[in-house]
Amino acid sequence: MLVHGIVLLLILAVAPSYSLICYECSCSQPDLSACRCEDTSESFDNDYCVIAEQRFTDETSLQLSRIPRNSTYIYIEDPYYILMQESIRYNKTTSNWNLVTTGSLFGCDWDYCNSPNLINALPNSFRFTIDKAWLDTNIYGTGNISACHTCAFETCGDPANPLNFTQCPLIPCINATTCLVYDLWSDFDGGSQCYQSQCAPDYLDSEFGEIYGGKYRLDIEGVVYLQQDRSSYDIWEIDVYCGAVNCSRPTIFEEIIDVLNYDIVDLTPFPSVRPTTTQAPPTTSTPIANPLTCYNCACIGTTTCTCT
Image 1 (cartoon, rainbow, N blue to C red):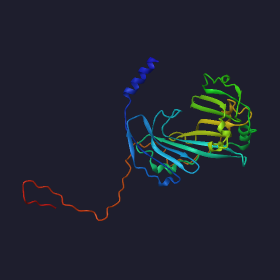
Image 2: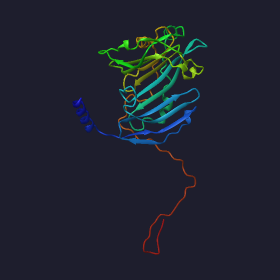
Image 3: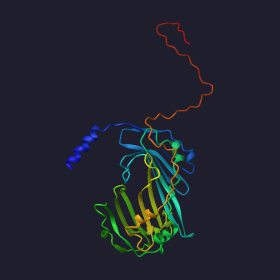
Image 4: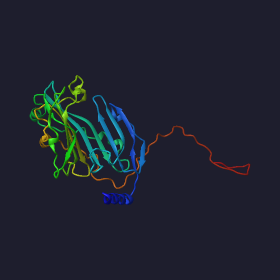
């Protein structure tokens, strides 16, 4: 551990420091085209620029800013990416499953890269879909369960040290009819995975449950790295809200990934290779009507002075 610490200090000591200029503004309204963003910030910290978008029923909240390199719960492999938060939700009135996009995050790491001009270029969705019959059987089921696998804290593992699911026994639910199961991939390529399961919170069974997304749904976070294979989406996290028998089984996440479909969306507005140099954004000004003309001269020690 001491050797690792010394090596880290040496790396930090020789690592070059560079500034990064990002746009800084926020906007929340139905029409984002009316948003204006001219302020910027410059920092020498190890961070990157972002455009963060949260989508609600009646409006979209937008923020252009910067975030620390290690601020996301799952480590960003490359800070040039787009992340989408989507939810496949059951509609009890129609017995259909609907896709809802709840947010997106664009990250980049060169000057002015989170330009407001890219707001409308953000994808509406990765269009995650799963066959209705599979969802009906494995997520909705009868709509009611009596017990869920329960581990109050995250249980993590990797191929060398698999998850110990004996820590998550089936426990009866009180005042809840669905399970809530989290799956978090802390190292997607290496197979490190964390699992947490419990009975769903009581409020999902209340009259306001639909406001929070409903009792039966899959919340999925997927990321595409823009300077890598754009046809490959990493699934970061899956949250399962379910009422089918044994739907909190530890294998449910691999099963979901096996049946999950998505579209390759158009990302051409985002360059496939980072720019090597970045020009400052052009400045524009409105011509002044009837501009004022003044004399310009300076005279010292004389009573006569020629000014033009």
